[in-house]
Length: 120
Image (cartoon, rainbow, N blue to C red):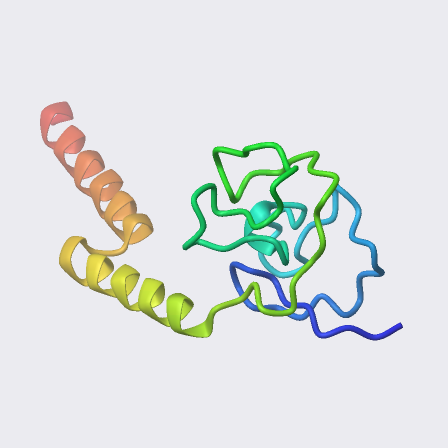
């Protein structure tokens, strides 16, 4: 049976996964666990506990793997606008502080050059 479910974090299609999603299923693109509140039909950020199912246990971290028996994957879990906003914020931070990997390489290079000075 075909479905239009996408990963809540990256938006990758989960059509290759069979329903119901297993507790251990992960996104094939970003490897995030999928049996999480943010991926559920009952998840509502405007609700008091962010869950519309009254009988569900309270889960503190809505992006963490859980054992909820009420879990039903939602076709609306991925929000492209929120992802675009997060990507823009990350780009701004990278522009401000530089790419973390490039900074680490430059730091290692500078440290190596400084050590050469003391060896002479």
